[in-house]
Length: 302
Ligand code: NAP
Image (cartoon, rainbow, N blue to C red; front, side, top):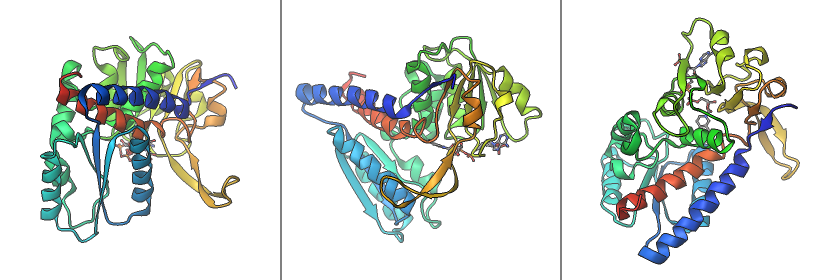
């Protein structure tokens, strides 16, 4: 293998230690800790396991953590009132509504009700606008793109003037990471191309990339011959391609694959993220970082 592995699991620990130290300092000086509420509607198993991990991480960091579980049949009006209650609660700095929501609830309306200054997921139109403007306007960069940028920067990769090609244009990954990498800022200043299903020659764009960020949700979409030798490859894709028995627990677990043919790509790339263990562990980590940031804004020390 020639590529250096970018291990999200290790970078996560580094960042969590930094957050933990800051939380302790703020607690001592200001007598307050970051407060995060997670609102979970219904009992979607995938949502429950994700939320459980969020709670565990928040508790580990010494946050105030509220898990607010609501039944599947909560009315839209009651859910909006609940969000409003947390908007007004001074001990809460981050509000997270776990998606998907039941069909009778308008997801957009719910997300837009969250106070933009507590929207630690960064999906509120106000925060999307702040991200687009860049610089000191930015409050909460969305968590997965923020994690991607941390992985690139902490791996010592020079982004200034680099050709960045982003495969995918979703609102949660492709568009925000493209926007972040083109900002006039450290860890950015890149020349960015975004490609998608209507792009005429995907391969030719990928071949130019010094940094190739792939978020398509198609297993093995990116072929090894599309990778520029020495490039940094960030594989965001998480695709379930089968099941196996875990050696650790003896239970059935999903076999996950990224959007890049990892086994061959690692012989050509200079840096590459594995799936799992690359981008995945960064999302919750950045959510914690955003919640801490929200408290720091409130205290005027951000
Ligand atoms: P999405 O909303 O489905 O968007 C996928 C994007 O990829 C679309 O813009 C689509 O183009 C493009 N695309 C799909 N197939 C393509 C192809 N054959 N050629 C070129 N472009 C193609 O997905 P997403 O939410 O961004 O997620 C992408 C992947 O990242 C998924 O596997 C998801 O599970 C994973 N993910 C991981 C994390 C994490 O690790 N924490 C977080 C979020 C997402 P069009 O716009 O033209 O349809």
